[in-house]
Length: 70
Image 1: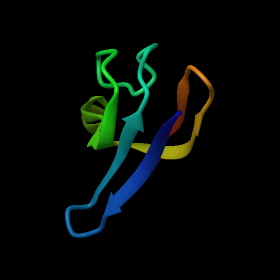
Image 2 (image 1 turned 90 degrees about the vertical axis):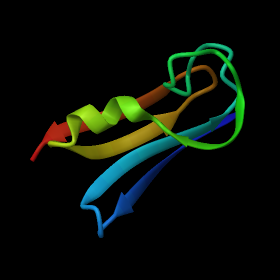
Image 3 (image 1 turned 180 degrees about the vertical axis):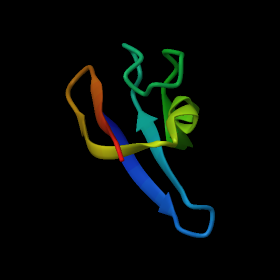
Image 4 (image 1 turned 120 degrees about the vertical axis):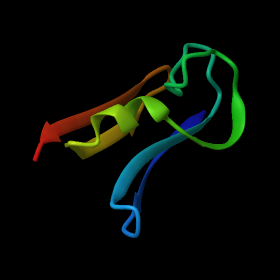
């Protein structure tokens, strides 16, 4: 009931993770439990722009991001 997406902006040299959907357990990673219907960037990951996103996945009540050093 929620989604994650990885977006790469080659003009800004930026890779970001976006989330939307139900958020009862905070699985959207936005610091709240309010559900949202349109994609929003998870700003937490902007602090770690030196890490590469390996994989992302969603379960019923969780989200997972696998990150690695370059």
